[in-house]
Length: 264
Image (tube, rainbow, N blue to C red; front, side, top):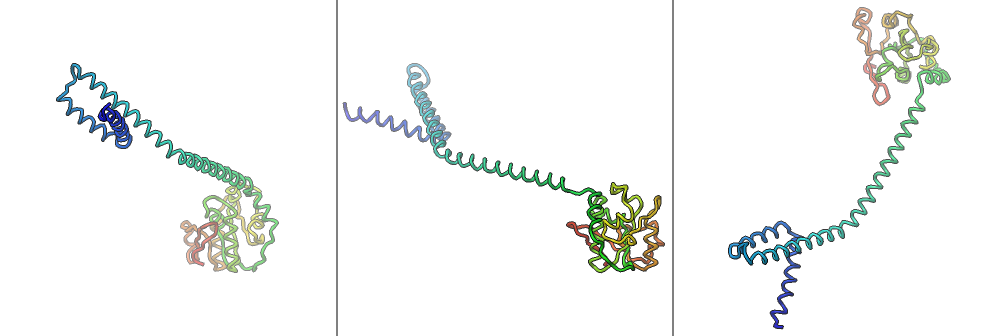
């Protein structure tokens, strides 16, 4: 065999490998170049007669090279991404496990909070056991209790209690006025002057529950005017302007569970 006969199959094999490699790296560019070369030679060797055999062989070679390129790309992708996929799967499992633990912990905490959240009756019973802070007999501020207990959104005796505590921390002696309907707003019809006082940490004579079918506004405004002391309320008392005239009104809000009073 001549050197050309020996080298020819070697060159063809190397050319096939190189062509398959080009397909695996730049598939569409390689196919585009292949199509352009094929179109050029088709003008000299048209698709007819004995030329069809050679075109068929060439097409088979291109198709075989394409299959080899696909196998090569898949093998390379699998070899590179296998560790990454394993790490990604491990990370995903860990993240899902942590999310599940957090969700379970949050659910347990939420159920625990709901379970241990005291009802209005339980709050009153607990506060009855608390000692009443001794303060002066002469009141220095009036609290519109029915108004204040709504400062945090819903009627809540705790809201009124924190306002009372805030005033007492300023060495003020509060007197709380409540509508008779306040017990209905709180969902506890058993509440009276003494239970309200115990829940608020006050002496009974520092709490006034107004008679049924009356409003506390008239009583507390008259009381404040007679003693010349401010009124804690967000009510403007527009329907009792003559009684409210000249009185100092202290408004407030609940922020972060603590009362913020404006005007004291």
